[in-house]
Length: 306
Image 1 (cartoon, rainbow, N blue to C red):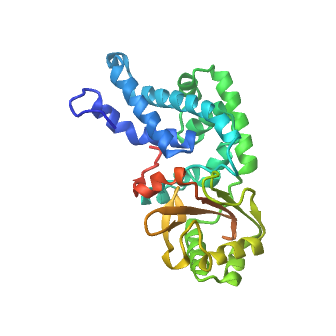
Image 2: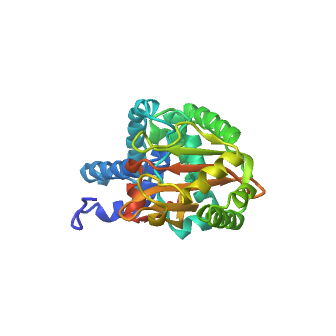
Image 3: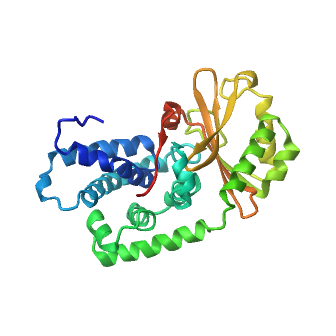
């Protein structure tokens, strides 16, 4: 961030900076791109005639939403040619996200994957309406569309998300417990214990982006996934032997996750999705080094919506 303490608009911008990042990250699924969008929003804000701005929060949200939409549209082609599954860039999150279940759910890896299947406009409308509770009129101004068009996009997006993201996840204490048990079983190479934690049709998605060797297709089934993780205790992974591999439980994207590190770098993150019984239905494994900068920095983001 390059704003200076002497700039008259700096204090106002700083007040909403966290909110702007929260919007941009949910729209883009990338901490780096979200930070760039916030920085560009600062440049526009610092050059604007702020005496004409009645509502700085709405004005800044409009700026960052439009900047994120531009980035989202230009990113589409890159993601179509991506090697293997494309997953969002994970971030470490603070404890506040855990307390606000809606905030945490809306930034979960699973939800961001669903949002990726929406059109850029639908994604922006869904995030601003369902997550940040903006009115249709406010969103219409932010995305420069008519209010009827926004209502239609909101309806389409809501139905799409509802069909792919049913709201029946286990409560957070059960998620934490299942993650801790998974962690113990995986680091101990206990296939049977892993099997008990996984739903029969569990799916593992791995994102290496062609930079590191990962499965290019989803790994499906409890036995296959359990063996995949149990093997981590016996094989070299991305050039790091089992003796030098460090795994720790951390909060990633508003929920419990695992961070894998070697002696000199972060190697991968692992996040989970659960069914109502607390069994793991989906695992998202991000190993593309280009997507691990935010986690490697150690910054815990506050992704609250207020």
